[in-house]
Image (cartoon, rainbow, N blue to C red; front, side, top):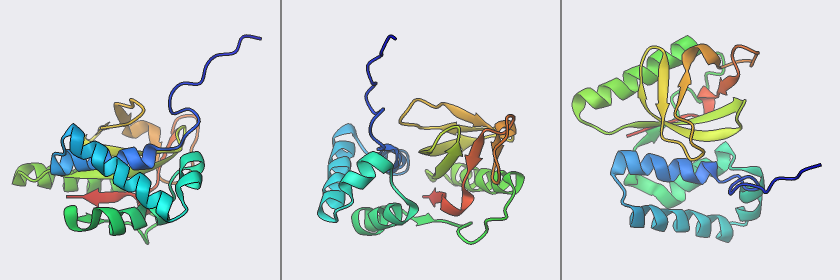
Length: 174
């Protein structure tokens, strides 16, 4: 049996932290130094609140994500979870609303992003920054470039729809 080395990140679940930093890079134009500083602030916050080990190994829950936005990010970015109480929303409806949000920002010259919670093929937090009727383009910590709508669902994965987007946990950021 041939073993392979673990790749960086294979044993950690830092995508939630990276997604916040990456969203701030898009919306607020953070430099590399500012990004490193924000990353450190989030790590220190998790360490001080005894969530660091769990977050590093199991990922960041929506509750922890919310506390990071509230206590670390504060008013540096406008945010909402518009579908927080709408678990029944279908992928088509959600897609239309994502497109509307991002397109409105673009037409107004305002930088916007959507922090997406994914399950299915990836248990992952990622950032959507551009969208068409068929594809959402990502600014992603593991190298995902886009998700095609035809491969996405908001309810139950299948062989054809392997990406489960969680609208109830997705942040709209401006």
